Length: 309
Image (cartoon, helix red, strand yellow):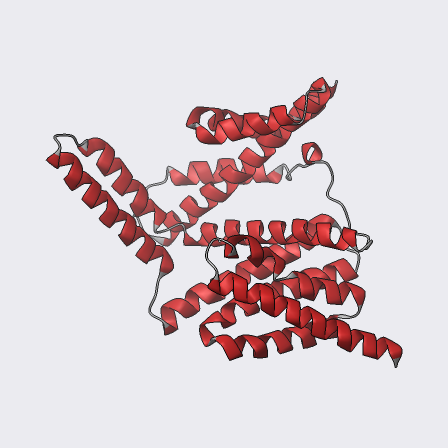
C-alpha cells in the first residue's frame, strides 16, 4: 500500500514538473531549445524507478494536460513521451548505452517521419519545401540588393541555387540525423540526472574507442560508384543516392574524429586540443575533408591499431 502511495505521489510530482517544462518549451522562445531536452526525463525516471506501465500512465496524464493548453502542442508530448518511454524501458532492462541510443533514435526518427507526413496531409505544410522557398526568396533579395550597389556574382548565386535544389531531396537523411541527435542529447541529459539520484547508468565507451562496422566503408564506396550512374534528378535512385551519401559521409567524419581523439590520447595531449581541432575543421571545408579521409583509412586499414603499434 505504501509503495502504491509513493508511486502515485511521485507520478503526480513528475506530471507537474513535466507541465512546467512543457509550458516553457512551448511558450518561451530561446529557453525552449534548452528546456525541451528535459521533457523525456519524467518518463525515463518513473520507468527506471518503477515500471513501464507507470510510464505509460504518466504519458496518458501528460497528454491530457497538454490538451488543456493547446491541441497544436500535442505532437511535442507525443514525441518526447514516446522517446522517454522507449529509452526508459531500455534503461530498466539494463541495456548497453548504444542499445539505448539506437532505441531512442529509431523512436524519434519514426516520430519525426509521422509528424512530417501529418503536417503535409492535414495542415498542408511541407516544412522542408517551405524552408527552401524562404531561402530562395532571401537569395533573390540579396542578389537584387547586390546588383543595386554594383556587385553580384552570378556563378556563385547559381551554385547556391543548385545546392538548394539538392536540399529538397534530403528530407529522409535530415530526419534520420536529427532523430539520432535528439536521442543522444536526451541520453546525455538523462545520464546526468539519473547519476544525481545514484541510479546506475550504462556508460558509453571513451569516444576515442568508438568505431563503425567496416561494412559501412563498402556501402559508402558502393554508393559513390552508384552516384556516377546517370539518373534523372528527382528519381527514386537519385534521392536514395544523395541521402545515403550524406549519411555515410557523416559516419566517415565521425570515424575520422575518433582517430583524432585516439591520436591525442596516445600523445597525452590536453583534451582541449582535439576538441579545438574538430571545431576548427567544421569551420573550414578542407580540414573536414581530411577528417573524412582519416575515417575511411581507419575503417579500411585499422589506422588506430597501427598507431598503437
